[in-house]
Length: 172
Image 1 (cartoon, rainbow, N blue to C red):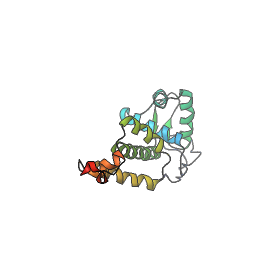
Image 2 (image 1 turned 90 degrees about the vertical axis):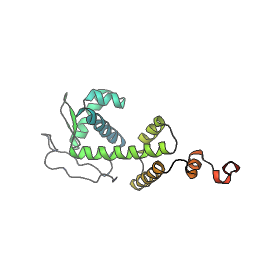
Image 3 (image 1 turned 135 degrees about the vertical axis):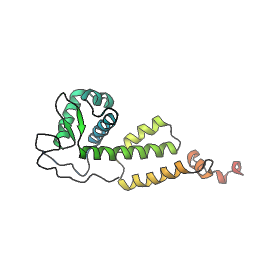
Image 4 (image 1 turned 180 degrees about the horizontal axis):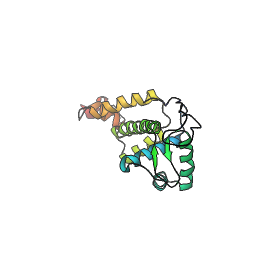
């Protein structure tokens, strides 16, 4: 997954009658990523999102959502008209997909290490915004290795239990 590079938007943001005022920065904020990921998740299920659904999922008040949607619209990341549905632009969906992919990699790794799903979900949400791209790639390889490893592999038990079983009397 790559960090989103600055992208110049044309004369107008996709699907919007207002001119684009900004471009997407090299690194968007955690808050913007959370909003885009939430809109993406709702849209996958329903085809589009609405302010109240976004507010409910993020645990914020609808006026906060409206304010952020205006910002995202000006950045060319969403199509939004007051009291209407919210849809991601192609660029917004690309950013949201990257965040969602990072989240899934991290959650899979944490669960493969033996954490329960609820804790893995919570920690993946926090980690997805701060880790470097190369770290995510390394974690992806590790998660894939752990998930595909044959059942009963002793080194995986060592990793999950935090001790070297091969050096203990119990493994002989």
